[in-house]
Length: 293
Image 1 (cartoon, rainbow, N blue to C red):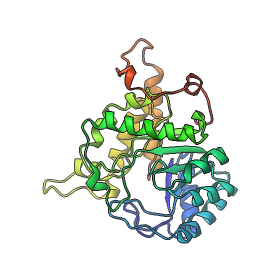
Image 2: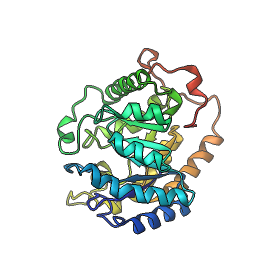
Image 3: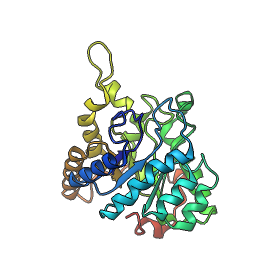
Image 4: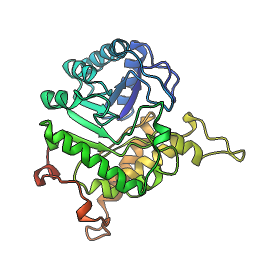
């Protein structure tokens, strides 16, 4: 999944693709580099970011979505607003990527149920201006799985089908630093819950801190692509459905390596251990089919 930020204040690219023409050209370049999906967003979710008006968000993303779809791209809309999600699907987007997991807008699940779009429910505890204060976990993997299970239950209650649902552990969201690493190391536990898993580690702060120089200064976003590709390879090898990245070529190669690696592993190799009582309640049919497979 290649990222197309139609924002003036993205943490990773500083508004380089803010105009519709630049955003479309960038999206098509990402497809040429190996992106299967394009995630178009019109509101920054970087730490501390303020919300934009809904009309501004619509004006930013809809022309870009229409043009990318017209060029044959598969498009995801990155939004927490139901009205934006509905308008994007009407213009050809096939995936709704909601970093709030539906908690930011009570109308979101209704839109998902009515449109039949694939829905990425991310683990989230609050908007960008407060999320760093919400990094408080007993066991981050257990807590994230439990809170995502609550989102799945709410989606089902709203009439959303299991095969529409993708889960995202929400790296960097209410997880400022070390909380991210257990989610990656124990990714097979999330995969074992039966839903496709999206991993979005690209250029995030915890990678910047990992790559800090001798002076302790975190590596800047554009210097984190190598580490991002490493995460992409490991996530793919652990069974992730998709990785969301800014620089596609390196991660596309990394995913190919992971696929080859998994392809020659013994079918009797080690399997990730998990507590059956802690599993998300998933229909058996959802494990083997659906539009997200």
